[in-house]
Image 1 (cartoon, helix red, strand yellow):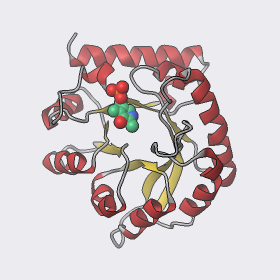
Image 2 (image 1 turned 30 degrees about the vertical axis):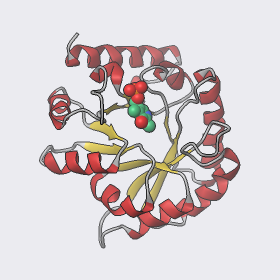
Image 3 (image 1 turned 180 degrees about the vertical axis):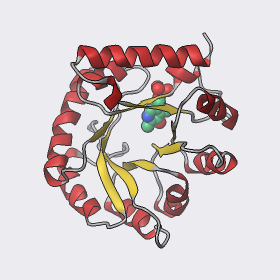
Image 4 (image 1 turned 135 degrees about the horizontal axis):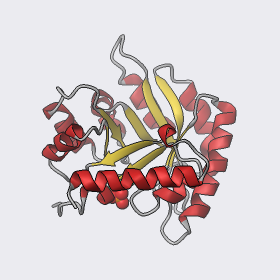
Length: 227
Ligand SMILES: *Cc1c(COP(=O)(O)O)cnc(C)c1O
């Protein structure tokens, strides 16, 4: 199968999962995760109609985004753990930051706003594991962080993001995420997005209400080995 065929097949599976869940496939955004792949892959995806792509490292995001800044309507989603000293570069390149998991990062993104620039769409990343060192805020601290983010005038909190932990049924993890998303939305009514689901578990994520899927290898094929 070539890239276009894999993309078409994944989109068909997303549509199936949506219909099975009684949802409209049109309310789901499929983000193609292009990390470690050359920028030429993003250009190929763009020609196939893809407008949402994801990266998890600031340097790679910045390099790729600047090399193809002429592609109209292409949106870069930043998915990785972010250091506060990279906030300015991330804000300059990304349309959406999925990985806001602490107040200091929200503050750094806030103060990186260029005068007159529009608001930055952000998601609150939740840690669904028991390991506090993994990316994401612990569920017990989600409400405090929600309050903090909505206090940042140039950030627009759109919803939540999470990665299903290894060693747990993804369906169970995404069900917990959905409940946490409800708690965030009770404070921030505009926070309606749920970014969840990767190549191996996007159908389960759709069943639990995911609005944004982050799909890499199922579309791109294996990632090149990275040094
Ligand atoms: C790499 C990555 C993905 C995509 O993973 P695949 O298994 O290749 O679909 C999704 N989300 C995040 C945060 C990632 O880093």
